[in-house]
Structure formats: structure tokens, C-alpha cells
Picture (tube, rainbow, N blue to C red):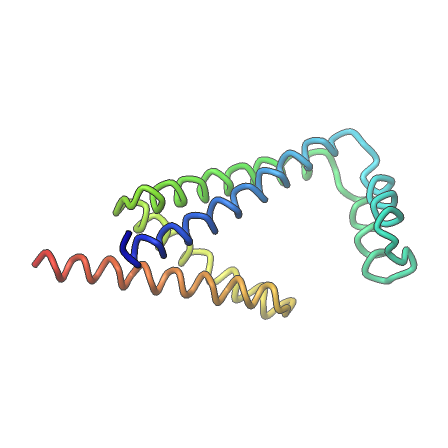
Length: 153
């Protein structure tokens, strides 16, 4: 297997993992419907031995209390939609299809401005790391697409 194929497979696995996490989030959101979200989060906080007096924990609990069922449904549906996109990207890349590369470039690069905004709004190492990985993926795939085009000319 060529190096370029291995890199495509690594990117595909990354997309599959993102899809799996979003599916889990969507399932979790729908399981929260018609339940006391604050009570569930308080139980999780206790189980993980997180300080309930922590201001961040308290802020999350306050926001959870305000969640309405329609918001939870939208979160679940949005998670499933994004999971489907990542699954399509991963499948196209895994099968080494040009449409998979194009789809990944289009979707991933379209989300980069949102990532920049989120990093600006709430900086964090995880967000910055995901941003760097996504920019690297887009750059690599554009390089691959251009190289293949030049070889065919």
C-alpha cells in the first residue's frame, strides 16, 4: 500500500471516530428526552467525584435546567446529520474515491471559519488541536488532488 493510501486511511479512521462520537451524542441526547437533565448531570458529577461547588459545574447545571425538549431533539438530530456527513467522508476516503477527497475538502474547509470563531471565543488546546488537524487534512487532500491532476495532464 502506498504512503498516500495509508494517509487517506488514517484520515478516514479519524472521520469514522468523529462520526461514532456524534452518534453517541445523538443517542445520549434522545435518551435525555422527558427526563430531569439537571438531576442526571448531578448524579454524573457525584459519580465522577467532581466538586459540585465548582463554578463551571454549577454553570453547566444551570444551563441544563433550562434545556427544553425541542432543544434536546435538535441537538440529537444535528449530531446524527453531522455523523452522516463524517461517515460519508470516511467511506469515500477509505475506498480511495476522488469524490471522498472532494467531499472532505469541501466540508472540512467550510467548518474552519467556525472553528476559528470558537477558538477566539473560548480558547483551548483541544479546539486548537482539532483546528490544526483539520487544516492539515484539507492541505494534504488539496495537494493529493492537484498532484493527481498534474500526473494525468
